[in-house]
Length: 244
Image (cartoon, rainbow, N blue to C red; front, side, top):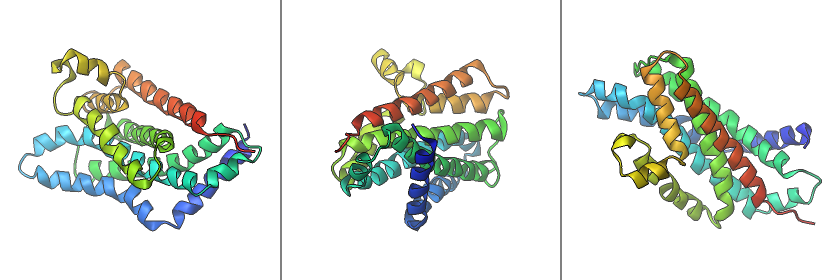
């Protein structure tokens, strides 16, 4: 592995994003706009919005980064860019870490913006404070980003990449504990939700909402989310084929 090659890859991806204002707008603005809409959906039920908003803030970055990253990486695959890069003396992890670093910076910016609007303009308060909440939101975006990198290997067109959203994200949305506590779900669904990353995103946001300290459960959730990030990068590297 070479840090120079990793940073060079990250710089190339960021340069491409800079020339794509629609994608930048989708990544940075959509979660914030959706949070604002949600605020006024619950216009006469502010208590419900206060309870739900932190968990939704964790879900939006995950879903948006999953879609954007999977489509962007798929373009690199179908255009032959990845094939050409794989002919060079570059480690697979150098390449994926470069993509990951670039999108990670965007994911962190997305989480900071959406979190600042949620805590500031929309007036949401959490016991854990801004640092805890923004940490979870940014890490949620990283999880969605790395899973998008991995899932791009299984799509042959941008339409197929978008189809992964309802197939991969929606079941997690139903079983993560957002609508019904996981303890009240059928045993089989609880087992399935135990291996879904969005479960730990929502649970971490619940901990931030309820407690001011870094609880053991919150730390566990963050470690599990980080493990999903590392695991998805390793699996993504396995999908890249070396070309001579």
